[in-house]
Length: 169
Image (cartoon, rainbow, N blue to C red; front, side, top):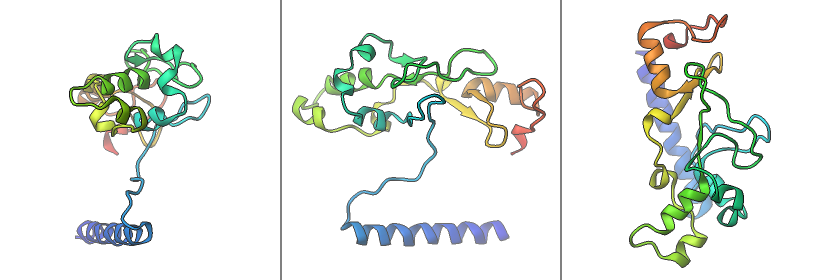
């Protein structure tokens, strides 16, 4: 009963904030709240649409020679974290490859796509098995499918000695 009241409060509050922001911004689109993964070394956010807006991304020679899914940070080239189940890097979508793919898409105007960055949901080609997730409590994580398979058979975190009951959160 309290959960439903709190949910209604949160929804109403979000609507009021959205309306106030639209009035203050003159109807311009605002940044949506969200959780972003950051590189452990250079602290750059790794959402695809932010990486594509980064200056010089369209002419980045390092990224132009890489695979569509990177195992390192596109900014500092340090390795990304590894899945605690398979021990392979979690991977990040190569923003250079996605920009090129978007520019070559049918109906894409080359002049318009050079200056505009498509939304991430329009760009992401990463299969669900390569998505990553992590526990909000202990911060351990890995590939989404590996973590889901782990918690089908276990209740404790898969990292040795952790003891967190991630599946119960």
